[in-house]
Structure formats: structure tokens, C-alpha cells
Length: 257
Ligand SMILES: [Zn+2]
Image (cartoon, rainbow, N blue to C red; front, top):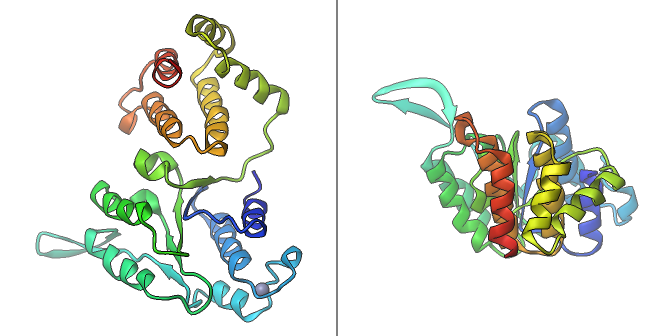
């Protein structure tokens, strides 16, 4: 997927999602991509094809990190016992200034909330954020920037549109994988899984394909189950994942039967 193209398209259609996960390895490339996404949304150039222009005031402010409608969640210095350490991470109280600011009216069209390093969010903090994602302030768009979306709760993942730079999927391969999922009967599905999916990597690729379809059709419950299955296969905290064949079979029985 071309991430900027995807954002451009949803601006064209007037169909921005409430929340996105930008999944990419941490580093300059990801930072630049996030900046470009924000510029794409906020750029003042009326010609959508020439956005982001990089030259208008909005684009320059985004690049400088000083755009008034872009609100970043900030980490706290961690206090362990009574000694302050240099470690920074997100704690519960970090959500408050972030959320309070997002509740105010934007200067321009919309507020944009960005959570950098969302992988570092602990479960309780994620649950707090989840409430806002469930009932978003009108017009607000969230970006959770993460190395691996599976570090986020499945409930968060299911409410976000995934943005990930990937090579265009091979059409033949994709339709072969879709065919497996489109079997009407479990025994046929089981047979095809045994024949066509040989490794855990294949299994994860298969999940990517069927998740994309489920997202397109807004079948959130299915997306959620697929995310859970991916987590089962990867193994929570790398404690040795579930047998992927078993996981795929269970998924079909849960979703399709
Ligand atoms: Zn611009």
C-alpha cells in the first residue's frame, strides 16, 4: 500500500477515518512519512494533486513541529519509587493534557492527535485511549505510530485503519489465498490449508489478505478475530505461539460456521 496515496484518496472522498495506525520501523523514514501525512491533510494548496506542497504556512509549521492543530502525546519521566530515572515512557497522567487539548475546537478544520512510539503504551493507558477512539470528538483524527501493531490491544487495532508501506501484493498469490478463505465448507478449507499453507509466514500472509477484505467490507468482528489469530500465532510475548494450522482452522470455525 502507498500510505500517502491512501490518505490522499480518503481526502478526495471526504472519508477520513477517525483513527489510523501507521506501522513502520522507527527511524527517519517513518518520521518523514508521518510529517508528510500531516502535511497532506493540512496543506493549504487547493489543488489536491499538488499536495503536500511543502511551501505553504501549514506545511512549514508541520515540518517544524509547531502546527497548532497537531497535538502530540508526550511521555513522562518515569519515577521509580522516589528516585527519578531518565527512563521516559507513557503513564496514565500523560493522557490528560493530550485529551484535554483534543477536546478543544481546532484553529483550522480538525485536530490531529499523534501518539509517537505507540508500542510503548501500557495496557491501562491503551484502555483509556480506547474510550476516546470509541467515542471520538467530532472531526478529530488519531494517528498511532507503531513498529508493530500487535503491540496494541486487538480492540484498538480493530478501530483503526492500518497504514503500512508495502509492495503491491502479487495478484495471483492474493487470489489464491482468498480462494482458500472463500470455501463454503470446513472440510474443503481444511484441505486447502493443509495443501497450500506450508509455513507460519504463509499463515500470516494469508491473514493479511483476508483481513484486508474484511476491513474493506467493514466486518469489524471478523477483523478482530483475525487480529487475535495473528497474535495467537506470533505468541503473546514470544512465549511460543499457537500451532498455526490449528489457529487457522479455529478461525474459520469461529467466523464462518
Ligand atoms: Zn502546503
